[in-house]
Length: 476
Image (cartoon, rainbow, N blue to C red; front, side, top):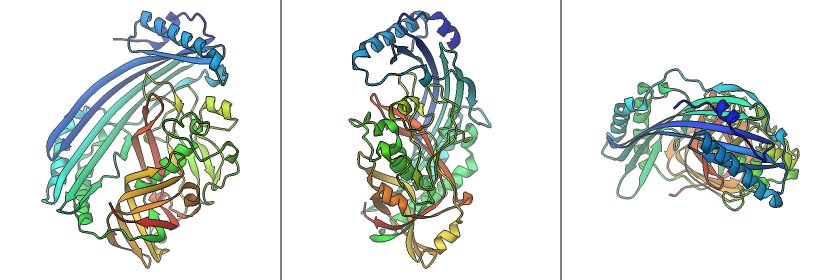
């Protein structure tokens, strides 16, 4: 079916709305999951629909439909108007078209090759067999995902934005077990190998080499001693920094949490409105940027889902909290500067404040110098578990793989390396930040929030980072 969003907009007739928009979204998903050499889940899906948003007497209303006929779209427009009118007596805030810019432009994610994921089932089977090829391995899993998103946003005030992104996810896992223990090693944490790219992401030689490493390291962990307990210097790899950034910087700085919108479901934040411009969130080495413009990172885009142009912004500068993760509505409500991050996971969800690409800027130290500076410490990589309170303050995180640091050198492997802390003191303990050569770029497709729930794609890039006096512990 050929569908023109612009023609659909001109065919609709509002009765009450001062302004209205259509956000069309078409998502094609392909998933292939193989366990121990046997395909378990082969899936292909196409999901298409339109969200209509209206502004009636300074209050927004929403309605959606997956029926793209003019009759159905007109009915959805009238439902959105009805809901906006019903909300009038209860509105806590008033908005205007200033919160919906009339932007024009397009964004296309990078990709070298198009292709069909189902043509790569044999590679997933080969990888799973490679992961399983030892008697100690009880599960060798290879999961591939290829998704293409086409989004078009048009409005009665003249907005016209087209964006297309192709996302790839590779998840490799090997679980080794004996009579008393089991250990799992992954490519880079659960679904962390996520980026915007084409079918070239499923590169056979790279994946086979890593499958062999993952298998051997899972067996190594099974035979390794527990992580010790106590306070030590901790060096954290980018594959774990992804989770640390996400939970103790990203979520607490989402403005709708700070304003209390998410408190009943996803939680609130320890951050207060008067912290912006004042709070020493981390040491002077901590510089955090919101940057959806980075080519290939998992949550890159040109405009958010209300048409606000995306650009790089410092969220934390020299350790000081300077900007919130809040879209145009939250910026009006709070009076705090924000970013273009009003995002929706689908055509049937309204945009809310979300992380996108949230990154730590590189420092000046190389990896060898960081390790050489430590007499007694530990290096940790790849997240395996996380727990953080509903204010995103107190946390404890577990990693897959640890290496003890003794007298400036990496020594023995330890299993079940865990650490705990409190967000602001933890970030203020940052004392060395790796240079660009230590950077890793990762992502996650399953950041959940909102009622009804929305899972969105998020990207995190980070160098290796070193922290002092961190409480570490072992155990399951």
